Length: 421
Image (cartoon, rainbow, N blue to C red):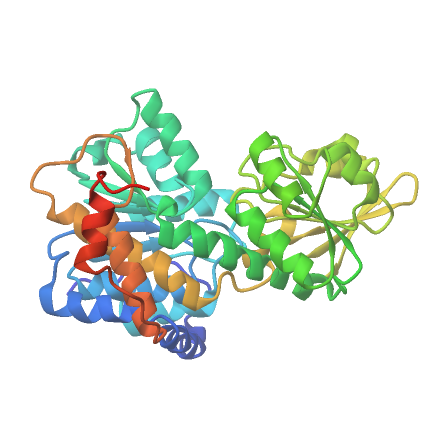
């Protein structure tokens, strides 16, 4: 066997990482069942799978599942601040997964690691943010012909990939795992909601009750953040550009304002839009002393960091993941997690039980790609309905929840049109 190639922070952390991986596994019964089946059937035998994902305990259990299915895997981080170094060490030491990820790595190292994962010459890719796919298309085009397909985990990545498909630049098919019902309805809403609040509290230890929390973006992730903030007693304000989502937020009882107006009254600002420059210099200029800003979108572009740094006369780190920016007029603005994903930069990311469904989709979609006798079209595809339903059924069973089945009479009624008033 050839020696394992990897680049991680500290191998001595492996013991601690293994314990945390095992704890996460206990809360991931769907993925565990899939891994047991994969170990028997080996549906990924002969496949080489490069994954660019947050290197967390939940991802570790996904890597174990893919390996059980017969795949050769390589893993790199999808965000410089999302790597759990102990998890990375355990993946290498205990599960023989080549990992290229170090928490806090700089941009050059990040892309070096990404290319290291691609050196296995993948037949399947797995992405969270589309950096892997983007690199293949810009720097490693020689790899594309051998790739059967890929999967994408998050909204930001799907947006990038659909843009590529629209201009006919996408070189191989991608399945948008993010758009599976068992992903975005639960991971995005319940996972992002809880883990974002967790990150804010860990970084600041502020009391949310009574605070004005401004949530920029009312997609599934924004809904989750708003719901959890309101549940902890915050007065939640929603900022939106989409009339339908703004109307929904208003009907849900949230106050809806433009960012420029919300900037004057907000205590805590959370961006979760997938777009750039949502909070800019003119908004920061209107914020009160002590305002806290953080981002729960994938990339660190939603808060204009250049505007913030330009306006600040002095900067200091006052707590882990909490930077203070002192403005010329004496006001202090605070930024969490360097403007990166606050739920991973300042906390541990989504709970394992919700990632159980997301990563079950990843595993089953990889199996689906490998099983195709004819290549899928070079486009962004939805998760096959049977996979979505299988994940939901397995999750319900693991929770001890039973549901009804339609009777023959009910099926006939729903499939016909003759019966009326």
